[in-house]
Length: 417
Figure 1 (cartoon, rainbow, N blue to C red):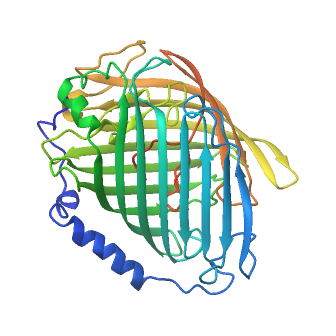
Figure 2 (spheres, helix red, strand yellow):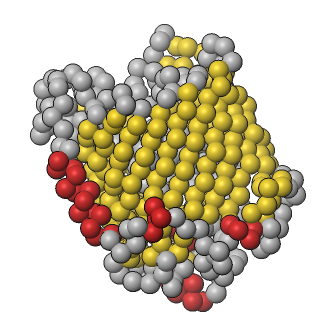
């Protein structure tokens, strides 16, 4: 059974707001009003946006890839300059066979250009394939509906190298069905009962980013560090309460031209502060999106550690509008329920390494392609083939998540957004 660590992770930064989630949420809203930006024309607009109110439509052809969501397609409508200069409104829908998603987003200015901005978004999701830990089509799954509403306020400093972004999320989850058996060690009746209980909660928090990269897409040198803290406070069951802290560090070593090595270190710490366990769908996942070669959401735990090193190299440029890159990479990762007791710096090449006791890191190797659109900022698609001791799998691979994304990705079950 998942229980709080006997030597729990603690930090003054995490402990400070324990009794003040509502006050922190109000602080974000007040800060949003104080920082409500009035960008100069042309300095915080979106690429390709006109100076007057306009409407256009988009197709999201890549948002249904993979067996978890099934076949489908995404469409969207974008409105520029509706309420003020340089704002953007985005409505999207991505229905698929096993998962249906819709989003509504607003940006007061382009967060990749403006020094101050406000981002709000609402996301609704229903899935009958929220696969839990394991591999194969017969692994346990839950049918779940969720609604998230979020507001983020961004303020950039030091020529946009430093970003401070407080945020507040309100969410509701409803479980319609739970398949059997639940993954060990949480397959007992009390946990199944708590899993079925609807969860409504608020998650205030703070994100920090330090970015010295030379470019956003073809990054050849520099450092990117992102830290996100949030505290979940249940509004429907006071006994569900936890802190979550995520840290991602990316370093780039140039090898000449567009050849470089991208190194990543990542960790997520979840600290329970209530008597009930953290719902399994709110815990960190480890799967193909983080480590090619693993199944989607193959492992779930309270904590996650990950390290990757990728050699990236150019393959093809298409008339300056698009580019294709390749990568070769190695990865080490695992999840833990008690980090102090279970973490082991060793590496296991066993197909099924120990789960309850000390957990060695799981290795993987990958090769893949990355498709970029330099004319449009932050538009990439990456696919990879991964090899682990337990098998081979092809995935849509995500190496870098932006804190300033206008909306959450359609077909993702990530709890950190």
